[in-house]
Length: 125
Image (cartoon, rainbow, N blue to C red; front, side, top):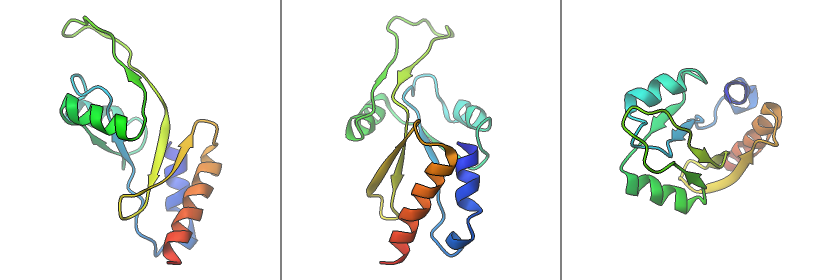
């Protein structure tokens, strides 16, 4: 993830483009407070912005983007657990419209190339 972000940001042909803003939306708002997200995401890249919200907000976003997620039932406060979820990067244009889903099958270099191509398409409008 960090390599992909750095490759896009260091691409000289994108210097005058709108900035790429990497966002991470939690699937587990009960555990992922803003402070928890900030600490967790610092392990990936300093520029990733973590978003959380109410359970209903998160469920709605996941449904809109067809994100699968599952949290175990009956977890006691403070107990550790895993959240199962789909893994995609959703590329959105500057107007907030969906452009493409980038999956685990893409290397950081491939993902950065896909992003750069879409930014180039946007710039040429």
